[in-house]
Amino acid sequence: MINRTRVAAGSRAAVVMAVAGGVALVAILLFFNVGQPFGTVNDLALLIMTVSLLPVMLAHYELGGIVPLWPARLSLVGSAIAVAAWAAILGAMILGLVTFDYEHAATGAFAISCALQVVIGLWIAGASLLAGPWLPAVTRWLGVAAGVGTIVMSIGLLLGGVNHPLSYVGGVGYQIVLPVWAWLLSRVFRQRADGAIR
Image (cartoon, rainbow, N blue to C red; front, side, top):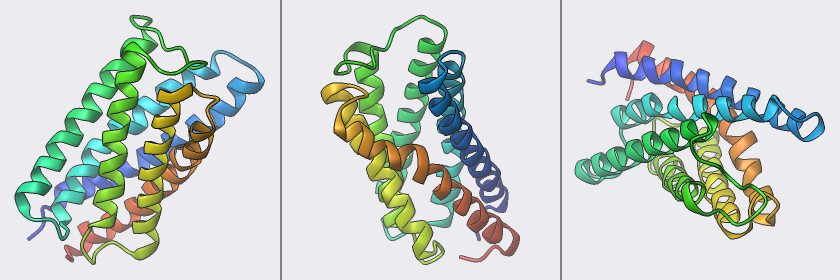
């Protein structure tokens, strides 16, 4: 039997992810046209979006996939640590404890956050691809696209900053596809929690 409480919590968290992702997208567009405080709003929204991924990971794990138990557990733990570390670094940046230079190839804390985002993207893509039959095809492939987009964007930031072509290409997956995936996933989780169907 699945743990309905975990899956229901994952559904609620996925809604928060989707809403926060939408806020982040609007905020970054406003930042490019207006400036602050929308850059900070974007950062806070991305922080909320990413931290909300933790209950989503647990719900995904609860429903299962084709990966054997121990590799799935290792993936879950490693990715959860990456989310927590990424959130800590972004939180430090928001508080002014570290600085990010978005215009150039990522270094220092910014480079570490990008590497952690690669791990997070790998989980999103891999968990979606390898999920059990409970995950509909559209949601599955949107998850793969969102995860790959997160990875590609992070590589672009590492190579040349926000204006690197890979940052733009991957940013579509990260800022647009990821919130859509989260919204659809919330509906799937809610259905599974209500019906406890594998």
